[in-house]
Every structure is written in structure tokens, then in C-alpha cells.
Image 1 (tube, helix red, strand yellow):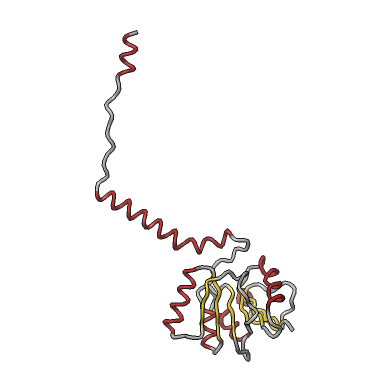
Image 2: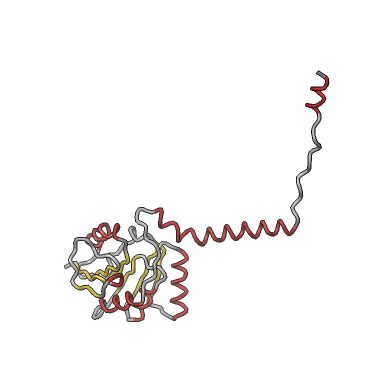
Length: 198
């Protein structure tokens, strides 16, 4: 029995935890900082996937911009780009004498758009970090939307409820489901549909 107790009481000497070298601490700090930074920067681009309607950031092509400008020919006044992304539609329409506003939920894209407007010296373009569903659209003469198919029915209801009768709506990538377009420009992914509410 003594032998049993002796073996159970014998333990190997404990090793103390190794200390991390200054270079190791620096590496851990840099890695953690980079991970946090990437999370902060990427979160606004990933979060749309968790909303009711996944509306990802996809920049407008040059053809889409040209088609939108063609759809706006002869129009003036105020313009709203719902989900303005990097601001290229707002900036191009502002260059064409519209008082243009962009509404975007992604703070980095709003900041980028504001910097682009400053860099180009465009003063009649404004950008707001807002939810397009909660933003009041009644004061605008022209509205541009790059939507996804699943949201177009609800957007159409919002337009009918909130827009003034003289407003022109330009839908890009997907048409509104029930309204009949007064004009269609382009083809394929670059198609734009123009709607009136009269």
C-alpha cells in the first residue's frame, strides 16, 4: 500500500508559463489591431446580407450612368439616388445641373462620396447616411433606384404613397412590378425603366 501512495504523490515538477518576448507581444498586438480594423471597415459591406432585403454595393457601369442621363434628358430640379453607393450617379447628375442627393446606409461609402464631391468641386451634391425605407422622398422631382428584384414591389408602394405626381422614377437593373414604364433605355444589365406617376 505504501508503494501506491508514494506513486500517487509523486508529481513531475510544474513548468512555469513561458513569457512572451517583446517581439511576440508586438506581433499579437499588430494582429489584433489588424483584425479589429478589418472588422470595422468590412462590417458595413457585409451587414446588408442580414437585412430584410440584401442590397449589396455594386457600382454602376458607365453604360448605366449614360442611360440614366439619357432618361433624365429634358428634366430639371431635384434628384434623389436611393442607395447611392459610391455616389457616381449623384455626382454625374449634379454636373448636369440637378440638385442631387444620395441616401446610403454604408458610412464608408457616404464618406467616400462626400470626399469625391469635394475633390471634384461639386457643391450641388449632398450625401446622407440614412435608411432608404425611412427617408422622406416627397420633395424630389426625380428618383433613381438600383434595387434588387425582391424589394421592387415594396419600393413601388413607397413611390406611389410618397412621391409627388410629377416625379419621374428611374429603376435600374430591375423594373417596378406593376407600374408601366413610359420609356425603356438600354438592354441587359444596363437597362433603365422610366416611370411617371400621373
